Length: 113
Length: 113
Image (cartoon, rainbow over all chains, first blue to last red; front, side, top):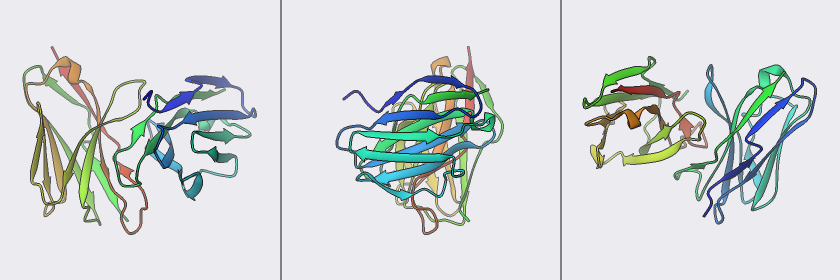
C-alpha cells in the first residue's frame, strides 16, 4: 500500500484566497483524521470521519474551515478565505479504529501571505 | 480536563548514551499509551503501544515503561545514534471527554556524534 497520500505537499497563497487540501487514506481504513501542526500549538485535531461521516468537528477553528469526505478514498479540507494565521502543516491520517494506531500522510505545508 | 505533558525542553545527548523522554498525563486513566516519531517535514510514525497492565515493553533499542500510579510513561533509546534524532510524541486514547487519540506536544531529541 502506498500509505496515506496528501496533495499538494506545499502551498503558497495570498490572504483571502481559497485553499483546498486533499487526502487519500489507506484502503480499508474506516477513520480519517485532519490535523494542523504549528510550533506554538503542536498537533491539533481539526476533524475526523468514520465511514465518510464527520464525527467530531469541534477542532475546526472557525467557519472558514470545512471538510468533506465524498467517498472512502478521498477527503478535502478547504479554507475560504485563507488568512496568514492559517499557515501551518496540515496532516491527514487514517486508521481502522478511533483508538488504534494512526497512519499519517506526509503533510501539506501551507503558507498564507 | 485531560492534559498531556512531555519534556518541554529539547534534549541533546551524546551518541551511545541512553536517551530518556517523559510523558506525564493528568485527569485520566488510559488503557494504553502510544509513542510516535516525527522527522522534519514528515508525518508522525507509530513506534510502540504499551497497555496499562504492561509495566515495560521493548522493541530493539527502544524501551517504554508505563506507571499508572505516577501517571507517567518513560521512553528510552539505548545506544543512541545520530539517526535517532527526531521529535517523539506520546498519545493517549479516547477518554470520557475526548473521543479521539490525543497527542502530546513532543520532545525534540538530538543525538550528537
